[in-house]
Structure formats: C-alpha cells, structure tokens
Length: 147
Image (cartoon, rainbow, N blue to C red; front, side, top):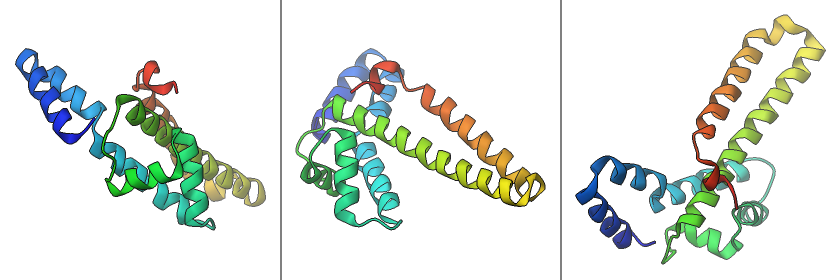
C-alpha cells in the first residue's frame, strides 16, 4: 500500500467513522513499518554481528528477502501490504521480548554469582518490564501475529 493509497483509504474511512480511520492508520502505517525495521536493524548491528548477517536474519524473520528489507528501511518500497506491516510488527514484538529475555538472563546470572541483594532492584525492574511488554504486545490481535 503506497502513501497515496493510505491517504485515500483514510479519507474513505473518515467519511464513515473518524475513530476507525485513526486506528486503521495507526495499525497499518508504512512509516511505522520503516521505523520499526530501522530500529531492529540498528540494534541487531550494534552487537558483534555485521550488517549483512543482521539484514539476512531480520529479513528472514519478516518473511522477505534481504534486498526487500534493505529497500524497506530506505523507504524505497513501492507498495506496502497489510500482511507485510503485520509481519514486521510481530517480528519487532519477538525481537523486543528476546532482548528483555537476554537482559533477564544476565541479571539472574549476576544474582547467582553475587547474591540476591546485589541485583534485587534491577531484577524486579526487568521482570516488570517484561510483564509490561507482554501486556502491550498482547493488544496486537491474534490475526496480526500469524504469518
């Protein structure tokens, strides 16, 4: 779906119900898909990995080729379909939960080595963050989460 098609769809929806139009734009925004793709790529490359490996990994998780993923990040895709935007959002959800899981594991390792007192406040914060993230991502309807 191109930006013009999105605007056209929104104008059609606004005639019927403005609240529904806004939720449609928020849920399926091509701009959001581009932003999420860039965030995931930057975080994936910030570690020990290289750009090519990160590109292939994220593209595979989104169900597109590495070239398509690169074009997506640069805003060079000609069309955006709802399925692609959904797959990117689900991939981002899984990516975030994976990062939180890694952080929780690291804090638990420190807890085992140095005792609970050393990281008790951090552990509670990370667990609260994980719960908050899972609750936020649970709001994504089940139909969007499937590939």
